[in-house]
Length: 580
Image 1 (tube, rainbow, N blue to C red):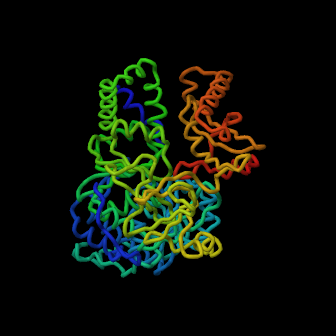
Image 2: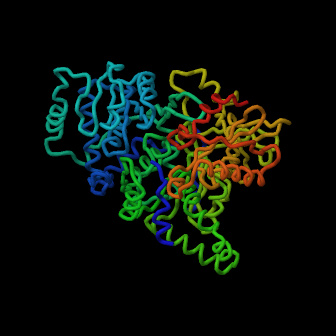
Image 3: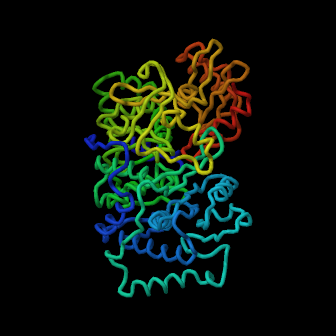
């Protein structure tokens, strides 16, 4: 059993509810002042550890890095509201540039390093960035000849492009200016940031969703404050505790909770910055023993699909699980070993970014893993709903954030008939940068943000996601077909790595990318695979209504293109195959 748990993470890729209330006008706590306070109070505590480099900086060290970057911005002529583009993996230098930008009064443009190079370049140009910071791994993919603005590498702060007599010795100049400004060294009292009101836009976060081209989401200090203050009210993390930041901080989910919330709470953030294997990740969990694990559904789903499901489907195990007493013993053993593999010290696993497989969710509920599923979107920086694992109701995405957000479902019977989920409140974006048409289309006439998600909401304000409006397929007789629900079932079948359900000539087709690694390990031939996939289709169809039946399976040789949240870029395959 222990061997199984050590191996289950190989496929990983890249409390009590508070009575906190607010009048949905503006968060009282000034967002920037949260960090002035945190850096002073936590001066000697460790702030960041770069696990790949085994280097650690304290909150005092981090505040000093920010002060040095403020001098660099002055040297480069960066003013309030100027845009600063930032490309790179999670790293202390990345975090310092993000924080230095917003405390300087400028606007950060974090760009995910796994975006397509052309998308990165287009985002930089569209954002009107005055300066570009980029890590060495991303530099080789970028065509720097498209840009006239200065480009600086991180973490070494060397000029890549934009040399002048003034910037040739940029790093030396900053060090000299820093020594002159702080002759007695940098101290607690030197942490004084520009006054930034909460209604100020501080970030342009470009989406790369499943339905089309990126849009620049204008996020305010208040949007982030709504997320951070809500998390603080729940005491998800306490001063001096540790977390492992797995998610890219350039995405709002990882940014809000692994980074901004943790930094405001005096937490020690351990950064997994480079591509990591299951071994290095398990080592990180064992070393750090995080108090909170923030992740996406894919991680737990892969654990369930690839390692747990094959074991519990064995006939002998099925027989054992049919005996209630033995079932409890087996489930307790699985839970204990899994818990230990993830560090053995966490209070909760928070899953977000996409809906979770019902079957995987059911199993983790059975073994009493302390997990919960939240709901959000980039346009809400990102949180809309959340429940503690103690209050979590399976298939839900938690309750709408009390006092922070409101939600409604555009349906005659919101608790029975799915409709579009629409939200408003503290976390809702200002709009899309230089795109008034998209901004207007994103909101209803009475000011609610259209999420594009189909769902239900119950009397306790819990949200239940059914799918995306743009992915909804109409059956021959007008029935609503939610492809995500069928894909979840298909993904749990043998040798299926990922799948997509589309409509082609009035038939539902399952596009499947097989688990070629597993095929190689078991010696399965392509001919055998076709037979297994047809059996998978028939097995899944037994659990579906007639109008949801999969007509046939089409095996793909190449992986699907995915977003940073590991969702398939559905629009590429829907358009390609003439889906209606």
